[in-house]
Amino acid sequence: MFGFLKKVADYTRDAVDAANYLGQGLSVTFDHLRRRPITVQYPYEKLIPSERYRGRIHYEFDKCIACEVCVRVCPINLPVVDWVMNKETKKKELRNYSIDFGVCIFCGNCVEYCPTNCLSMTEEYELAAFDRHSLNYDNVALGRLPTSVTTDPSVQPLRELAYLPAGVMDPHGVPADQPRAGQLPAQVLEQLQANAAAGDEGESIENAPVGDKANG
Ligand code: SF4
Ligand code: SF4
Image (cartoon, rainbow, N blue to C red; front, side, top):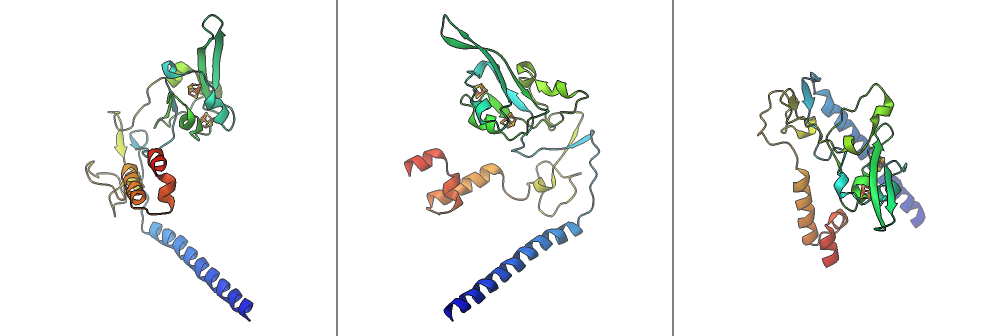
């Protein structure tokens, strides 16, 4: 008898959860119904990439120690670190470094694990080329500073939907100083740290800074 009641309770809970998830999905659909299409007049207008956008990788040759960690953590062993061993100094000498953006999946693993922080993801996304081989960037091309939508005087930067003020759908004509809906990543991090400090269990522990974890 008890087993039967437990099955009924589980079934009811699953049914309520399913209805809840269905409602959440439909709420997104209905939210989009009241939106009108917005046209971005590219290339005269461009959307500003998000703060954590993973675009073309920037590389600093002088900081690279040729350790090849970036190659090992890359899912496809993509970065090519060209070095030779100097027999006199018994140290590696870096000759060249390249990443083929025709193959890269922009996962950011290499950037995350580089011990000297000589790699970084930029907001540059315009990588179209007529020849796929020209997407193989050497250390000179990788060292070029990225283009920025917000500093290009020939471009009208527009905010993406997630970065518009609450209730605003069209990025045209929104003043730059109008605050966006939601929180900035730095504010989210502050909140997580405050939660961790308050002893709040859950994901805040996962995201707490290493120093906090070590001290805790
Ligand atoms: S992980 Fe960083 S320092 Fe090491 S080889 Fe790659 S780019 Fe250079
Ligand atoms: S972003 Fe990912 S795929 Fe591209 S080179 Fe780095 S680790 Fe490899």
